[in-house]
Image 1: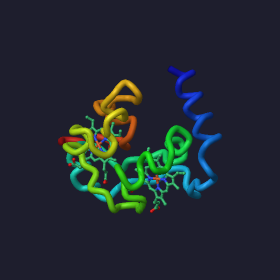
Image 2: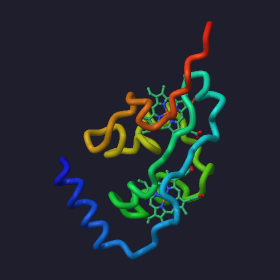
Image 3: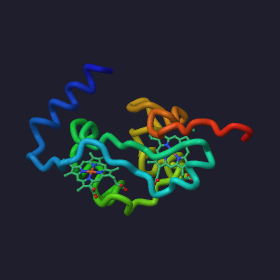
Image 4: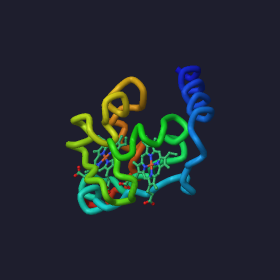
Length: 114
Ligand code: HEC
Ligand code: HEC
């Protein structure tokens, strides 16, 4: 598995022109209110890491529009093979699964008496 990821990263590094964006992580937080109800907070999206694994046009504009906040990412969509759950991504053996909420979301401290 590690070997596969390593060669994928190497292949991408050698075959992609330097178009990387100047951002390591993107904080995705347009839906804080509904996430709060689930006891969760913002998603920290490791953009740089994904750039190392895939090509820009594997994602843009097919899966994600390349502008922060312009994708209607929600869990029903994620679970039906869209956005983060796109075929071969977080709905498959290639990446950690969607039920590991805290791998993506901040976990909010429990409110007493709730
Ligand atoms: C695995 C998927 C994936 C890959 C590969 C990827 N991106 Fe992104 N990109 C995203 C996601 C997800 C966002 C956040 C979108 C949002 O906030 O709704 C994003 C956001 C962006 C943004 C907007 C940043 C902002 O602050 O508005 C730009 C520009 C961008 N990507 C360019 C690139 C470039 C250039 C590459 C290749 C070097 C690349 N992306 C590779 C998924 C990807
Ligand atoms: C692979 C990353 C990832 C995982 C794992 C993940 N989420 Fe999300 N989730 C997101 C992203 C990205 C958004 C969009 C956030 C935004 O736009 O503010 C989101 C949005 C949400 C929202 C708000 C939108 C909606 O669907 O109502 C809720 C609630 C939510 N997630 C709950 C969960 C729960 C519960 C789990 C675990 C069972 C989970 N998420 C696991 C990435 C993930």
